[in-house]
Amino acid sequence: MPKPQKKVSKNVTSRGKENESTPAEEKKAPTSPKDPHPPPTQLTKPHGTSSPHVTTKRRQNSSKFNISKNRELEKLPLLKDAPANEREDLFIQKLRQCCVMFDFVSDPLSDLKWKEVKRAALNELIEHISNSRGVLTEPIYPESVNMFSMNLFRTLPPASNPTGAEYDPEEDEPTLEAAWPHLQLVYEFFLRFLESPDFQPNIAKRYIDQKFVLQLLDLFDSEDPRERDFLKTILHRIYGKFLGLRAYIRKQINNTFYRFVFETEHHNGIAELLEILGSIINGFALPLKEEHKMFLLKVLLPLHKVKSLSVYHPQLAYCVVQFLEKEPALTEPVIMGLLKFWPKTHSPKEVMFLNELEEILDVIEPAEFQKVMVPLFKQLAKCVSSPHFQVAERALYYWNNEYIMSLVSDNAKAVLPIMFPALYKNSKSHWNKTIHGLIYNALKLFMEMNQKLFDECSQKYKGERMRTLDRIREREGVWDRVEQVARKNPKVRACGHELAQPMCLQCTAVDPLLEVGNPYHGSSPAELVTLDGEQVSLPELDGKAHEVTPAGERKKPLLRRKSELPHDMSTLTAIERHKRADEFLATSKENS
Image (cartoon, rainbow, N blue to C red):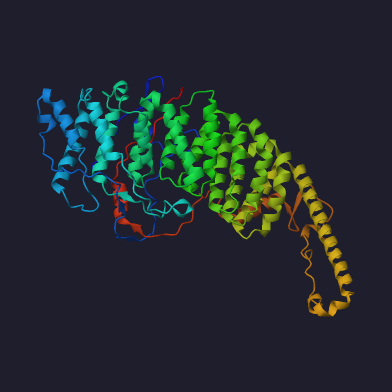
């Protein structure tokens, strides 16, 4: 299918004005929080370098359509050949023809002739509405909306893909809609209908009402990513053109999220709905309404706790950052909410939280940073100590962020005492050598920030370790006395074999820093730092960081390790042939 020429997209503001954006701007990929476009939902999974391809039975399913009884369609004359005064009636006849429903599942080879008549009629309608002017007369509106409703509003089939944490968009093949040859053309026609220069919202609002929007939102649970892609663009166009429906659309999207978070934990269209919201949030007027703030705190934040977060996390993080750019005062409740929902046993999800947290810190105000830095760095210290090397690695990459390091430098007296024990403990005890290099790099940066404070933290840590060892020895002494008393019991012979076992002393492993034989015991020279019994100067610490960290390791992108499974070629081909309705959603201003 040849690629159609890209049209200039129009961003409709709440005042009815239109701001044009060039195709070059539409192509620009979102790479930073400053980008006005939300990250696009992924249709296809990344192409593996060595994954085998297999030919399998195409994964198709069909919704429950009301198959028409009379399916014999008459081929009508072409619109371009009809006299001008008859084109409106012929256009309506073709729209009514397209309301006839066919069977694509139980007997896909049936009615091939009439299916082709409907397909040709839909293609002709799309071409006519795209290239002609003055087509959308008042009688066309109810017929167009009715044709769309008859074809699209249906009962979706039961879910066939895994749900929750079991579903992985990178490995699980999507289930495609069997009736897509006709559905795609119906979506294409309705999108051109909404984007036509002749389209009049004042007439269309009689037919595109709240009931229509609610049925449209129900379709977002379709398992076919191509259908969700069209729905996303159509709903965004309706939001931009129908000001009276905006509050209702936001409310119903909220209800969808509430059901997803607190009831079902299964919905296929969360990523697409968040992508629409990312564009809507970008256009919110300042100051933010209380309704919008509650949406952030009561809807977006709880979305972080769902098992299937990985499916929609990029879009969710974009929405959160958009809010914080508009209202910096929301930073504290947002970060505290993230810490509340921080995963305890799911490491890949923890990496996602760390990614989002860094995006938030990139836009945080210094005054807001001071409010959250203590609980924030307590959590980062736990992440640095994580035995999962990707979690520790992602947390230590924060030290490569210049803005975050400038905030830390201004508040080193509060941050360094929190981070030092975790960094010191894992400097050589962590099993992954890459982590050693990153920790040396973090320690070096802390030494450069404030040498005196660094030495104070080192001495404090040494004192705490000595007190810990004293408590351990004291506890072991108490147990020794208990054992001696127990041996004086007359019945000691009955369990003598147990008392014969030597007790395991917990204090046998002494911290090298605390050994009396250490020549630097009790002293901490200004130019030295003690790491695992070794006296390391600043140049040596820098050398260790470069020695342990391979070249380019610090710049290495974070890749999710996935097993390579065979790809279903028929599914991949179908999705690759799909022409996205709109590469990125445009931004619309929101004052209502």
